[in-house]
Length: 225
Image (cartoon, rainbow, N blue to C red; front, side, top):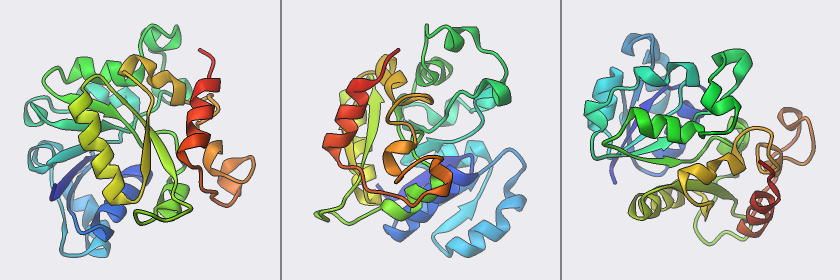
């Protein structure tokens, strides 16, 4: 577990990259505008980081984090991600992404949609339900009494276990929310989405607050489809 590939290097992607660098991992970043547009971020991150195309970042990563606007999910390269664990941080926002009937009517989750796009990869949902500033500030070493938990979901037990190990290295405990079809429990407009990690609402104006596994489990259970 030495290299993290990032397809999408916006707020969540760059935050995950910073956590990875702090944990001693290498990162390969990419976005839709080309490696040259990531020069400033790479310089900030230091010698463990480099910029590349999405295909190159996917090929280089032992894990690959996908954090792009959902409307662009079909642009995620398939071949470089074959056989790899893909961490899906995407959310569906109709005002931004347009209408996806299979998501709008609840017939499919965003991660199931990405898994369909990447049939040879093992998709695990994570990082999508926490505000990026809170993600940056709540990471804690193993054993810390105020360690925060993030929900994950996936259809492959081994992939989920590996993803949990990655999140552990990055500073977070995990709660298994079930299969990709159950990942709706921490999509937007659910109790565990963003406000679980804030001292009040609106979440973007409030200080980050730790949320342990028991709290996350309770909020997942309270979700209504």
